[in-house]
Length: 50
Figure 1 (cartoon, rainbow, N blue to C red):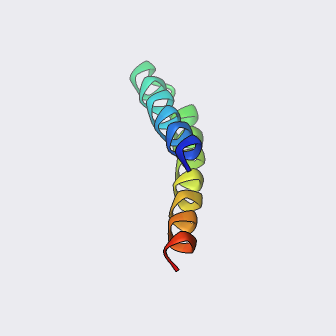
Figure 2 (spheres, one colour):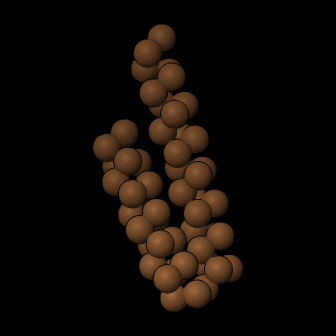
Figure 3 (tube, helix red, strand yellow):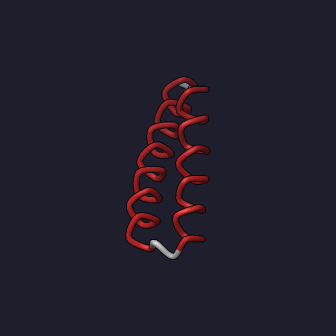
């Protein structure tokens, strides 16, 4: 879980830098990857609560 959180934060930061450079295509791709990781985190959290 901690690895996924760290990876998620890393992807968001990477996306932010891409956006600042004006590379919107990379920004969109990296943000999509980050969202997939967030879904995995939420699924893990849900499975550990039950």
